[in-house]
Length: 174
Image (spheres, rainbow, N blue to C red):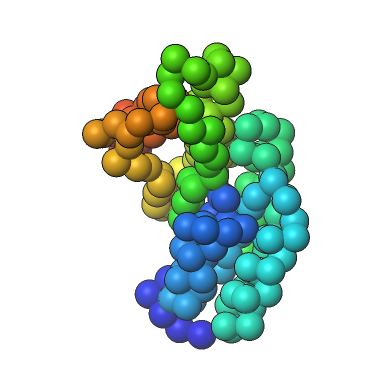
């Protein structure tokens, strides 16, 4: 299979369904090798099988974006399987919609942790591989909720806007 991403390896978090699945299948159609991660294997294997059926290469790795050890192991497995990580798509995320006055701080922390800490952990795991290769592209899946707000999403909006700041600072550090 040849396409714009032939010879590139993309690690996609939250790849088991929704936006992550769509990104994975689109990248597979462009020839990318896929490192797919999520917290559960059943959905990942289905997406990996779909990518393989389309002629792509895919490695499903169960990983929790909120665990540094898990993200490091996923990065190592993907790099070992395909020789590198060229593209990282930080897509793992959750919603716990509730107005701020009705939200517990545990609910606040969970969403912040998954979106912001998870993005930092995954990026930290992939960064040395890309840095040593002197090549890499990192995509952060964000939301207009971070810029404009959305009722019941104070935690989500804060996390998504923090990701934008993280991305902007990271681009300067390259």
